[in-house]
Image 1 (cartoon, rainbow, N blue to C red):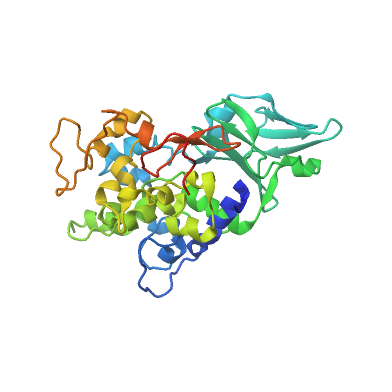
Image 2: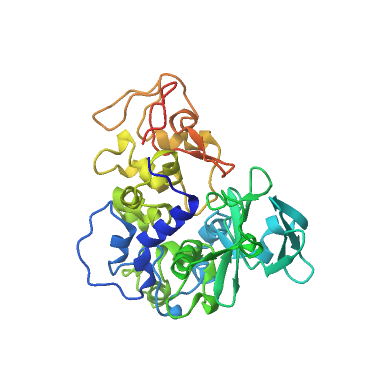
Amino acid sequence: MRAFTWESVVVLLSVAAMAAAHGAAPAARSVPASTTTREHLEQPAWWPTRQVADQRQFVGERTCAECHGAIARTQVETQMARTMMPAADSSLIAAHTGLIFTDGQYRYRLSHEKGLTLTVSDGTHDMVAPVQWAFGSGEIAQGYGWWEQGQFYESRFNYYGTTHGFDRTPGRLADAPASLENALGRQVAGFEVRTCYACHASALTTAEPLTAAHFQPGITCEGCHGPGLAHVEAKRAGDWQNADIVNPANLSPAASVDFCGACHGTPKDVALMGFVGKLTVRFPAYRLEKSRCWGTSGDARLRCFACHNPHQPLEKDAAAYDAACLRCHARAADRVDVAGGRLEACPVAKSRCTSCHMPKVTLSGMHYAFADHDIRIVKPGAGFPD
């Protein structure tokens, strides 16, 4: 088995999406779905994580809300919308002050007196850094970063929602820091930072360095649907025939899973990079296409947003997903019509299907149990299926 750290997950997914850093796409060519994010980004059409050269192509979520008010009101509460924010706006880190974390001889303290600052001490010397950005909504985890002299630094600790406290950032903190400077934060390579921003922010452009870039923290409307200027201008001109906007609902099953996989890892991204074992549970698109019911080309009833409404906060009650399951599986009292696409009902239970057929998997260091999207009959004592 090939071993990977969480750092390598970020870096390798960054490599898979490097085409996003280019404002102009190469000449179009046929791209099969499912495929890699890089292949999708080489096409001229909008794809998530693409970065454009002209900031004026974006109109912002307030403009979108003029026509799509109901959707906009719920979307801002989603984990995607809150996946990046100024650290000062994070209620999680704002609720903590003083000593928050200890790693060997190093002690980490937060102060809110002159802006949000992090102080790391080895007992003799201190180093201080401004905490500028929070990545992640905090329901699973939230990490922190800052810019200093044109270099981006990542905190060596995260906040974890299930423990309501701080702990090491997974993977890259297996060993104790080698120095006080190293303890303060990890220097992040420029291409990796840009790709992190591409999955945690909207309206990102290629025209400016990230230290001066204009963007919208969090994934808002245009993070998935693409720049909205042409769409807005067409509608204001009364042109209702030309949408000029991307609607993922029109994609094929495989392409729609790849669409979400631009940030969550397409099946081909994950396979190409050689991830195996329980680590792959972090890539729901990959796990979904491992399901027997996916078949060879997918099923429109099984794509990501058949179960998850991207405009609403993630539903955590297993019973809420039963309706999606019953699009393919009949209840015990229903007539089973295999020819019509409905399969036999589960003989064990009548509700909360996902609690058995999508078991939770806890990954080391994450303090969270992730639902395995490889939908299957889980046999007692069975290991994790690659």
